Image (cartoon, rainbow, N blue to C red; front, side, top):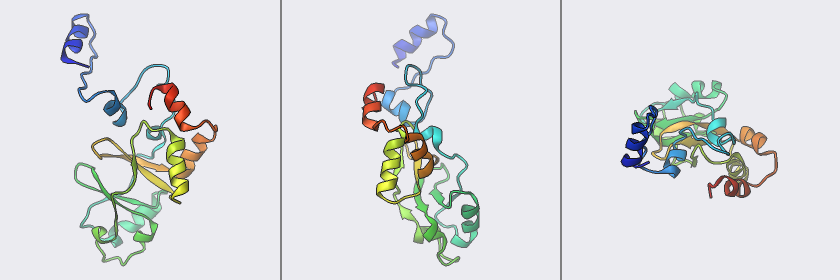
Length: 172
């Protein structure tokens, strides 16, 4: 909302006024709280697993492989100190020579979804590309979690197409 609108709400006694300049689409893309008729619709951000193994470019595969395997996700997300996603180690990369650096075997620029996307859209992508999971990030690329295909498929099982629900919710 604009600075003027925020000031007016505060002048009316509202104490929890949020001024978010980038706009509604960016608000949703960052997984921030929503209100209204479709606020309770389950989105990929709701389904994503937030406890995710992460690593850095210079880490050795041997140092992170076991942690990734025992996480239940069987992946390790390559991030910066600010948790911005740089890449992804999928199961086959975790089997690389233990002395290999993460940077040498990571998948660069992995597919990501914003938290406001509906699960069936992500489930269809993962099915088509034979992936077990995709990353959920903010619009700035900050890691929020990992969405597993089986979780997205389970939620999308109601059969209503994503584009129909998006039109109804105003998220075209």
